[in-house]
Image 1 (cartoon, rainbow, N blue to C red):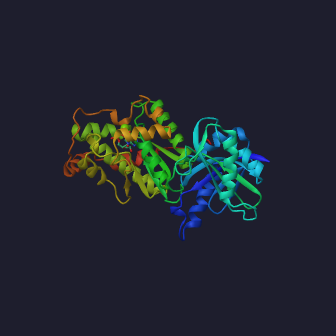
Image 2 (spheres, protein in one colour):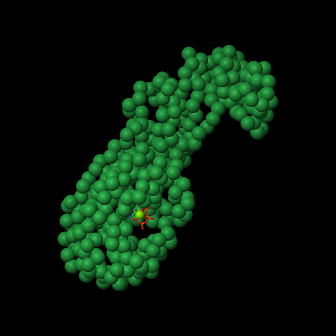
Image 3 (tube, rainbow, N blue to C red):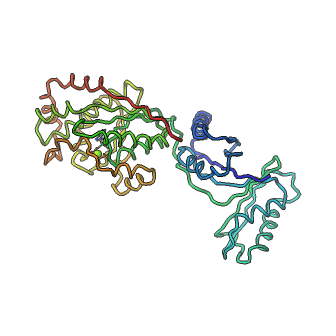
Length: 391
Ligand code: ATP
Ligand code: MG
């Protein structure tokens, strides 16, 4: 018997204390959701999980799925073998490429019934590998290659080498739900990823100015939300028709305050839809000072339009470069890069105010006498798309 298994390690932080079973149940549910369409066995031990008895050609696919599960710390692809010294020797050798290098064997022995202790087994397997690999030298302190053997109780062992980092964070679902203001840009998808990583379920809201923004711009946002489902699980996306409101702003308000007022109305609508859908927070992709609408004064004036929910801005202290790098890592970069116009660029004033005053913003906004009716109409015409994870 010899088979590949995937060994999963969870972050220890959240598995302590009274809430341990709550976090762990969520984590296991989220892992199992990723394995729904795969024939395999999920094995739970005290400090690790294993995916076993699966079609080995799926190893790469399963590893990439597990790397998207928040709450997992790291993983290793291991070989499971019956515990006998020949099998351990042969399997360890498979993890030892024939090059010139330094190595060590590390043994962890839960099975105390064996006639040798961990140090003896490590020395014996090490000697075997040395005999077969002429370029090898033992280095116990800083080896290039460390082959690990985990000898379990029930007559089997796991042999592995590399530890691959997973996404870390907290299991999705442990921190309630957040409403992500999702544009087609680089930032907001990364903001959603960041909050899902802290355990939030996501809903998303997008403002669409048809026909000034295209079907493709809308599809781009649907596609971005779909990528996020790989991390966050199912996402309900609300698409709000925003054209009439933009017309009204354009017609009634000072051009330099247009963006400020648009932001205030966006966040107001987002909060109303959030509350109606059980979300306890709003999430935006704002980063301090990135553009005119993200100065301290602009953020203050936007924030004033929120009634009660906290607004999470996980990118507030990040540079554009860092955000783009994350976008690349999580797979949203290529979509965000597509050139379709966003509603913010429709009727864009030449010189938006950089330091808006709250008083002026409110006064300008009040010029749209039928704003409440327009907002209610936009909300009642929301298009809802439910996106389920593809894998
Ligand atoms: P992004 O890359 O997320 O588009 P940005 O750098 O383009 O951000 P802005 O256009 O100022 O910045 O938008 C700031 C934030 O406002 C966005 O991160 C997003 O959360 C929200 N937002 C902007 N436009 C829209 C939209 N059309 N629909 C929903 N949310 C939006
Ligand atoms: Mg944008």
